[in-house]
Length: 392
Image (cartoon, rainbow, N blue to C red; front, side, top):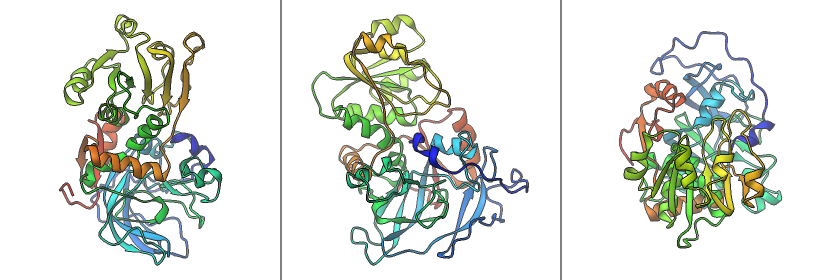
């Protein structure tokens, strides 16, 4: 999803007050810096005030529930690596204060007069998108994620000119178009990461025909993290032979035993990589660190497809020979449109697919962010925003 963020505004100076000494359970909340006339609903949340890698308690206001809006009590919010990038202003576009979170699940508390698809008490989710123009070719095809005027769930600019705040907060107001229903079969905590990690891998898998259930088709998944482990689950659910490709030998047991991957390849072992040459029909690359695509391309059959779904800070290396001599294709993909996201969520309900999560309290957000920076999570942190402590 990261490429669309280049159109956002640059970083704004944070408060000069030292925020690092505040704990998340501290009684004081920083007041919001943005004031918009129709933003009247008081909300408590957690925000980054500067590129320190941490968040602090933060009080702000959300807009009134309009005729096309749905108000949600936030129960859970997944922690995406993108949250870290924005908190640290890695891309130079962060607008502070920043309330992260775009893997949001909760329960509807209020609906507008024009809303017919949702009612109070419904279990719903909000992903990466808060708004789009609703009128371009992409929006008409429910490819809202590719709209030139897309607004992110956080660090975006909404229709009223306000900066959007994400799901590290007690409640959220969302336009009815940008909500999905969470199937009753899925717990709200483990379903939350599907709203980013899930749709990010599902969309290209659907686009490239990986979910058609064709016998004998083989998928490679590069990286076994938040996105990678969900890609393995999708592949197995739709009958693909799945190979996990990783730099960590410690992940082989997890891949084979926990996720039921068919094969595991250590990408730093040249002999193993050569043994798998021209064996895969598809590869999904979920690695956000700089790396060469050459060795990965060699694993693909002739006409094989490699899809990038992560955004390394530095350009990846793309040699031409593996492309030319294998007639292979490299493409990219970012999240998905709303129709596709609901389709993905419904399929997850039918197949019992959820993310493997570690639930953290709001007091533990900064510890979790620090662990996330070290890739020390299996496989997704989810913040228990409502403090329910139960799988709803």
